[in-house]
Length: 124
Image (cartoon, rainbow, N blue to C red):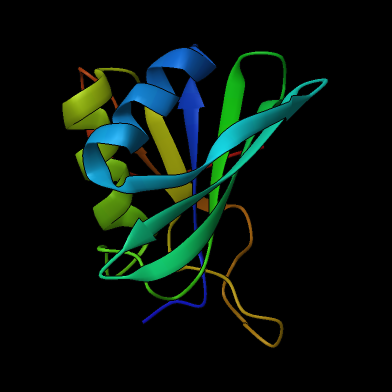
């Protein structure tokens, strides 16, 4: 289990992401938007999860969705990315192996899912 989940969505509007979250979870507190960041709390299995949506997180076209909890319905970033791609129909990227402070894996190794392919790649 990962300590958190983070995915990056290409050219996906925050409103679409919020609608997706509303279908996946119970939204506990209304979203608060400050600049390009939107934060909210959702609930899964009676456990609150803080979510931060950050527009222009990776270049101007990618929006980060960060679930600050190990208690999401997904076992890892890739499983979340697959569901987001299926539900939102936009390219999704995430870290290939998850991330930990002492991790020796290549930090540039990512996973991408789009209409043409799915698999690992180097994001530079």
